[in-house]
Image 1: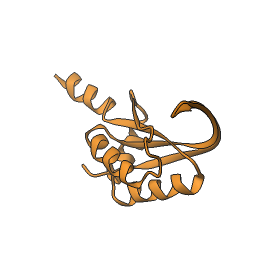
Image 2 (image 1 turned 90 degrees about the horizontal axis):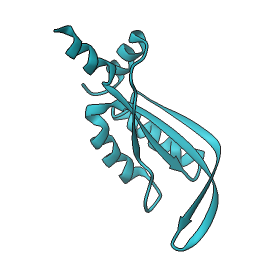
Image 3 (image 1 turned 120 degrees about the horizontal axis):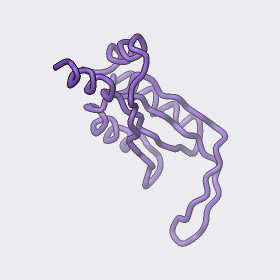
Image 4 (image 1 turned 180 degrees about the vertical axis):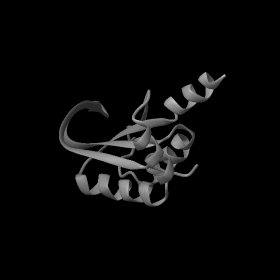
Length: 115
């Protein structure tokens, strides 16, 4: 009965996790996604250190993480737009589940995104 609707509502939103080389790059992408209603909110976390292998060399870089809150139904479109905005050749764009949350916040997020 109502369980199906509730389950859908509880998993309606996801995070898209991405990293950027600077806060400015992350903010540019975040502002575009929010303005275009592809994201309700983007949390930007500077001061992260990443260690990874790229083209045969181990790299160590300061990066900025971004957690993009969007509807699951918009995730593909948001990632397509993010790829166009992103300065990296191969940007990290990972969809992470949001299992639920307080209904007043989720109602606000619904109003901020295309539905």
